Image (cartoon, rainbow, N blue to C red; front, top):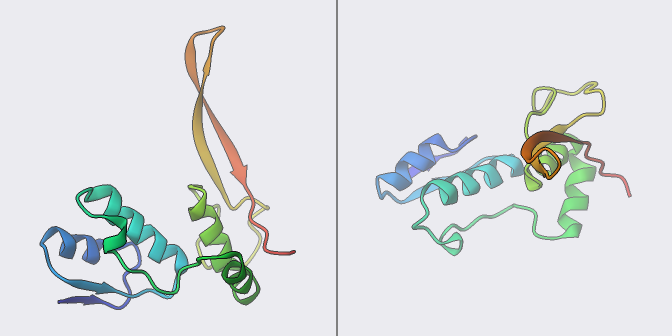
Length: 130
């Protein structure tokens, strides 16, 4: 049994799963929990999402509202992760100005006129107010 009480991005958990070990990962961050689950499922496709039990993650709108009120910065990280945004423009957990940009999403669009893919990005800003 492998226990990682501060599993962050899930390196230990990932290694334990690859070595066919039972494991428990704990992290205070809902963002980290989601990141780890996604990492395991994307890198080890033989697993079924139902095989990984998560507790304390957001499952409904009420839980999201509670997190936004309790810890807006954790809500911001969760929101960016939930929609696949990358590249937060400040260190996670840092309090202070981020110029209103919490992350971005990179994508490509095909232009028929030029018959090529063009790279684009969308800027993400997360708000927790009602």
